[in-house]
Amino acid sequence: MIEQFDFNSKQNIKAVIALGFFDCLHIGHRKIIETVKESALKFDATPAFFTFKNDAGKTLGFNRKCVFTYNERLIKAERLGIKAAISCDFDEKLKTTSALNFLNILKNNFNPIHIVCGFDYTFGKNAEGNVGTLKNFCDKNHIKLSVCDEQKYEDEKISTSGIRRLLSYGDIKKANLLLGDDYSLCGVVKKGRQVGRRLGFPTANVYFPEEKSPLKYGVYHTYAFLKDKRYEGITNYGNRPTFGLNDEVLTETFFDEFNGDLYGENIEIRFVDYIRPIEKFISENELADRLKKDLEIIRND
Image (cartoon, rainbow, N blue to C red; front, side, top):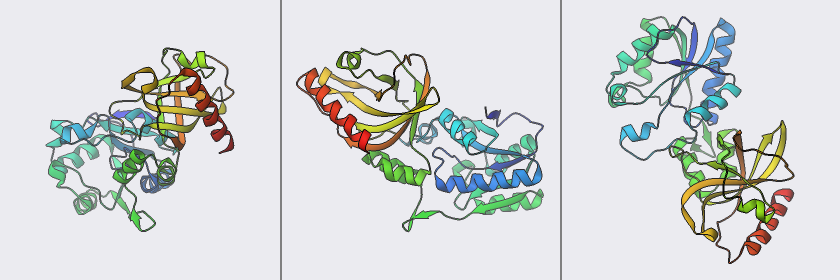
């Protein structure tokens, strides 16, 4: 498991650190992480990245939710080769910390020998710090600095806001392309009303975290690795109008050919494509017929 360090605690490590928010870990972020890994290997140091634990958008005063939760980011960063996460809450104290103080805390607590960031990285109170600020600090403290260039797709900057927009449209395929990985949701399987079981489509129910940037309501082609084997799935994300449940938002996933009990299991549901919008059916039989058609779609996808 990736090691977790609090930003305000002093650690006896030699680190190469990626600076940013990394709430998305898209292919632009992955360029930064690759640079960190290569340098850490060269200098026998710990490859680390900085990120926030909480929903920073609330502190900033606007509704900008995370593509991936803190725990989801840890999982993805570890898969990319990061060994340590340096994190803290984005609260009023950090919000009013000057750029210079932020860098001094980082230097004193984590002894970075190399810092890597994106070309548009900003930090500190009122985003007063930028790449120029960081370069001056690193030069004075004999810390190597690498700044990664802007990453584009079809002449458009790859950004977290752009990926959030694609997710809200249900354009999972393009979002996955820019993420460099499949969009996913991690969570514990909860016991539901077992209506799906009655219809012949038992589902794994996972609640969608409040801080996570929402998808377009609909039915998706998904998959998960269960017992070390990949199973294709049909996931309903959103409300359930057929049963008069229009307020509670969760995911209900039927995994094709999986037999077993997943209650209490922590699983990762990975999204492949948008199939159709949520519909209100006049009967359970009509819903079951539609699910059979959905199943044929994912089997032929």
